[in-house]
Image (tube, rainbow, N blue to C red):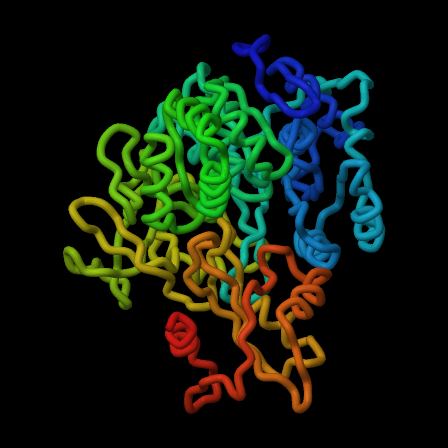
Length: 490
């Protein structure tokens, strides 16, 4: 192993070399396969906090020939159950602290149930004689993302897709073994899995992991001078700025000086407000590198590593990625005209899990239809919004308004509702519920949030509530969401 004695992962539990990680991956593989050579693309769902165990389990699943299905730590049991069932997981793994939450879900569908301690035991890891490396065109990962159909759908990527996504970023952002990055992102999302962990380990670099967002601890590490690459979502930068502004002048100077030793700081997963970019540049000297990607494609566009980065722009196509802008008929848009962004390349996903029709509709002549409207200005792409008003990007997550509406309508006080995204400095878009109440009913935001807590992930729960006599509708009775958005914007 090339980087055997180098630090691969640094977590609150200790520092782990590439050799130690490789041994743990082999143990997970052994624990999953038993006497079999290969899991044959069986889906393995796992609920493990970001850290050494999480990385070992995910890569052990891959080594065993399984398809990794990472579960979100923030999701309530109902959402975890949906993913486990939809993926048709035959194995479910959880760390001991979350066993009581996940074990009943696994048993309910007859899946094999394991704790991380079971698959990371000290027993020898034996590789069957004659076993072959996993073919790169096989399924590797299913990440669940919200879509216009309401319930989240599984985005399937192959080993080759993931390799292509990582290789593109290694080239564009010049990762090396000398880098040390800090992960503060969840690991059920492509941003953390590919852009941070995937790139760091492929380059032989070190990846420090914070199991959850801790603003003060994050600042401590950024100020240390020991981090060279950092990426986060706009919501996290908003919180870091607030912490810096509340700090003493001496601490502010220490934090700013530490950031100036870094070579690259990036932002993604949601639009970065110009004010946030400018304030971060004032504090750290870094103009955040904005890029554009999706669960289905990895990263597609990026501002340059070297050269001017323009606020509000997401740069140009990354190595190995083709991008085009088309009109409503699918023809190339006129130069300078806006249109839908379409992408193709080796990093584009294989399929939506067991959704043949949705997979078919997602492509046009081999190009993936992103649903994002963009325009090219002076050689750089600028995003203008979504082709669907039912997708909201909040805090770095893409959520379906239709899914949230289905849940909110179940509240006994609600007659009907519409969920929209309202521009917000911290969240990018704030999930806002506009509701018609039943006769004589009353509802507060606190009541709605408490009720939604057991039914929706925290980032999907409404952060604002407006009660109206009636929702604006067209002749067919469909709610006119653009009218609602304009009303709330005023």
